[in-house]
Image (cartoon, rainbow, N blue to C red):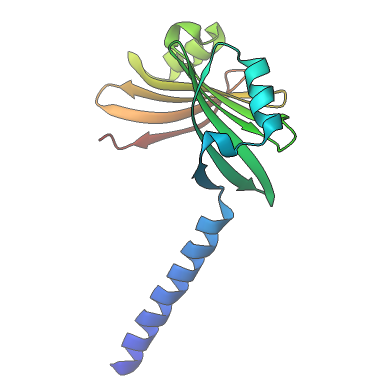
Amino acid sequence: MKSKHIAIIAALMGTLIIMAVFSTAQAQENKIAVKDLPVAVTAAFQKAYPKATITGAATEVEDGKTLYEVESKEGTIQRDILFTDKGEIFEIEESIALEALPANVKSALEKQFTKYRLIKGEKVTEGTKVVYELKVKSGKKTFAVVLDSNAKIVKSKAVKTN
């Protein structure tokens, strides 16, 4: 009986260690004050998006490299941009409305989901690679869907809604 309890505890401890390792492997985001962004990042952002307003800032570590995230809003578009400390753009996440989605992406959604409704959409650009991360409702289910720039569905899974 005692050995069963020890085995259960050991299994739980192993699971916790594995969870801790995987959670630290993912990008860690730490909020910072906008004034603490490197000058090169602020200058690059203002040059690229002169009409946008900075709404927040953070640092992220990806693959051992510190990146600076600028959260912004420009009209109805929300944009999160990751910069290197030299002000080079690493990644752009930009909200996108259904009307602004490329025709081939809309067509792929229509084939996969009957009478879908876009709940949230983001266009993610990293270098020359573009993907669309979407949350759509079809019937009574909600799905998280990722499509590449050729409108190929890369990932699709049902998600719980709050």
